[in-house]
Length: 157
Image (cartoon, rainbow, N blue to C red):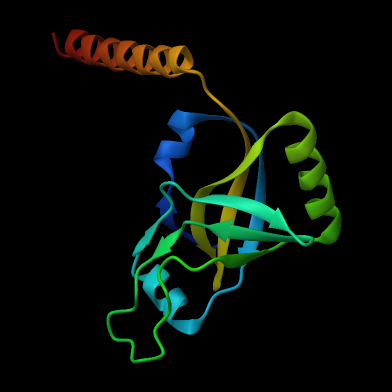
């Protein structure tokens, strides 16, 4: 979770990940980007839906994240779906690799935000939900929404 006392600006939230997975743990990681990717992210043109992170050769890579081409870019513009390296300490990578292999968990990007001038990605160490878990979460959310609606009505009358 980003530190609320520091200056941070939310770029995007992967709402689909919260529906598809149980989030066991979160990790903040930096991300290696080109200049046009940073400018596009500042404009909010990022989509994390369907994105995931994988560990390859002792490095963590973000796959499937879409950062739109910078609209004022030139021929040196970036590929929107390229793999991007995530910046973590070696010990963190080793611990994540153990958890992913041993428990069948996966790394999913949950949020992307600027912390100061640095773009950060909040990774979640996640377990997949079954279909009945998803239905249960939807029913719970609808019940809470209905309860809020009724209590709001009672306060008026």
